[in-house]
Amino acid sequence: MSATVLVVEDEPAIQELLAYNLRGAGYSVVCVGSAEQAMVRINEMLPDLILLDWMLPGKNGIEFIRLLRQDSRTRSIPVIMLTARVEEDDKISGLGVGADDYVTKPFSPRELVARIKAILRRSLPEASDEILDIEGVKLNPVTHRVTVIDQKNELQEKELLVSPTEFRLLHFLMAHAEHVHTRAQLLDRVWGDHVFIENRTVDVHIRRLRRVLEAAGKANLIQTVRGAGYRFSARSEDIF
Ligand code: CA
Image (cartoon, rainbow, N blue to C red; front, side, top):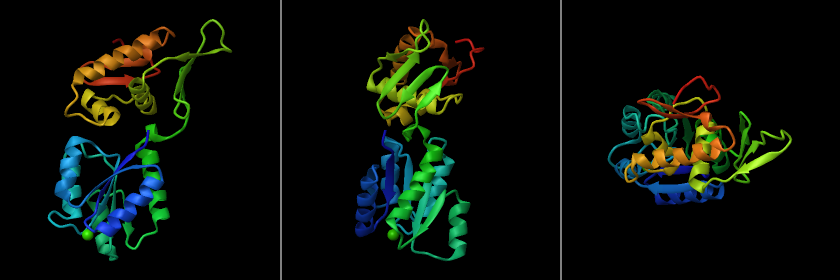
């Protein structure tokens, strides 16, 4: 699952340089030239990280971060500020309003990519290639296989057949095990869209995943939390 980076930068040459380097590092990149355009994109689809220029036409970078942090939907999107300003005061005010990191122009693309990676490793565990193994359910992001230990023969692994969407959903839930996610959050993070897809879609795919896991005796790992949403949990005391 490649992470999406939204670049908010009004200088075309820098926009191009960023897009080139980020695509080269394997990210999906969306570029816009102002905070207003960025808002339009974010309403359609949540990016996994925002690279934000400080000086923009219209709303500046600081005002834009403030808006993002006020809205529960966008509050936790990591933001790296890009700026030509070098004064320590500016750096502090950028971090003070909630930027996660700060890069001064001219910047080294390699260093920028390293910083993006470091932030995404924390905020987006489902974008990592790490094999997840919880309660005998093993998910491999590289081979896209989900296997369980065979109940009759513990040395044998059995592959579970899931669709690409169900794989992404299971990957997300397992990477954030024990966390409860609302349907809207799952649509945003797994489908990339909470506007045009109905909440019911989540229920349908959860049901299918449970059916697949049930055949392996593992249906209780995906739990419904009444009034809140769904979670993947190794603790089975919860009734759904
Ligand atoms: Ca600028």
